[in-house]
Length: 70
Image 1 (cartoon, rainbow, N blue to C red):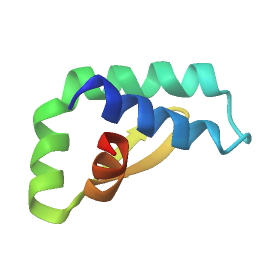
Image 2 (tube, rainbow, N blue to C red; image 1 turned 30 degrees about the horizontal axis):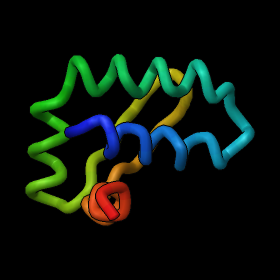
Image 3 (cartoon, rainbow, N blue to C red; image 1 turned 180 degrees about the vertical axis):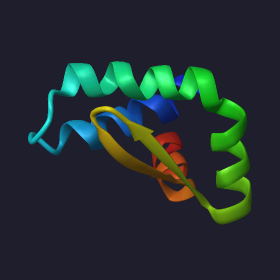
């Protein structure tokens, strides 16, 4: 997953002000760094990946990635 896709995901997360965006960014990046193979496999198999962090559970879809590239 490239920087643009991660940035798009984090921007989507920031749209929800119910959580600390800085902490959520850190938590998601930590998750992605430790679970990239799982995220990629979920995206390939299901078209979406579930990212569970202490800040909450986030869903990343292939549509999100396509939108980030546009």
